[in-house]
Image 1 (tube, protein in one colour):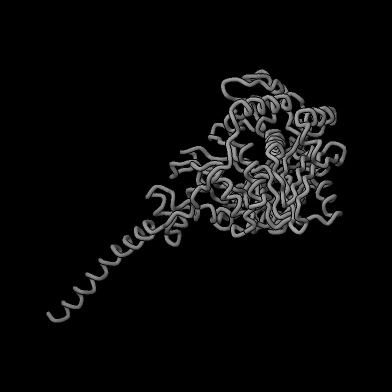
Image 2 (image 1 turned 30 degrees about the vertical axis):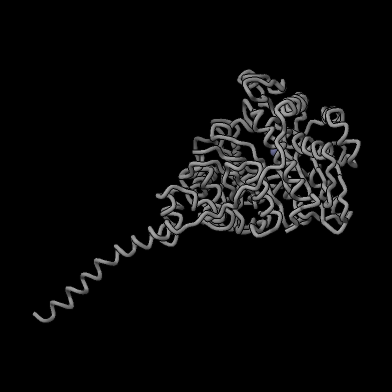
Length: 496
Ligand SMILES: [Zn+2]
């Protein structure tokens, strides 16, 4: 039959289509090329004996319980720092801001260059009463054992303060002469929002008309091999942005009365339904901005199966997003999250509650805004009996992302590759809030890093029980800060 031949041809072509599609998908995955730069040579490495002495200095600082919000111990910590780093405090200009925050300045020889800023904080979170005995070593004991320094602040963030001072001390001893100026800013209330420390420091800089080429603050660690699915190596992450912050207060007013004759819904039931609606209607997930930059940078290093998915997001974006959403830390990278954190209402079991109140804490993905989140929440709740309003406090929109084309970012990649040659470097997003958000007006390049090697089981130690840092990691961190300052401010500085 004559019509049969063209039909056969068409069917053959149709059958070829899926084969072509698979070929394209595989080819795209195979053609991904690494975006990692070769690791530059290290300047030097801190000798072991010096690292041991440095850890002892950090241990002494951990023993001073500078709990955020309690003013008693900051003076002692200042004195300890001065006596531990006599040369640094003698050669740099030192100021105290807002009573307990510290500011140090090492002027550069070329006033035309904007200085760099290194930030850390002196305060620590308290140890939850009743959990002290759960610690392997006393939380403020500063014990060095089994290759670790144990104690509150060992990771967050006294090691940042002392590692910066160690690095500056090393460079001073070497006779290093910075072209670009260096500022060190150590706030004293980061764990309570930084409204006294970092905010006052930022105001002082603004009043003096000082802008920074770059600001680095506490942030993302180095994930040990195996921690990032699909990657067999270590990954150093650079926080090019952080999430915004919003707490919404939900209140419902009821008539009260005797619980033997209740209305169809009490104020508590209405509030409960509102919270359930919010949980059932999260803000949409999207893979863009910092998370997309991270995926693009790491995809070429991934195992083939993961590479297939990440190289073909045009085809697999739904699948990839679905997988990310299922893992809480990954979910936090791709959406504005909501967590109901406080609830209260009712006074007695046989009394109808007059008022019920809850607080939901949102962490806002760059691209979303406080206004958009409020509109989403009101819409999701869809009940005029529930009043939604901002809880006064630390609410802020997400700061703008630092460009991955910025000289400071590129220099950070080079510095991390130099200090940690075994780690791939990628941009990412900090899901918490740091003091650096007070500095968005003072620099276009804010980077959040704390290159200390961690594994998944380390996460609950920060702000939790058995906070600790490996002695070897602390040594690497000091080296990193020395490299960063030298690369940013040296005579042969790669001023990109
Ligand atoms: Zn911190």
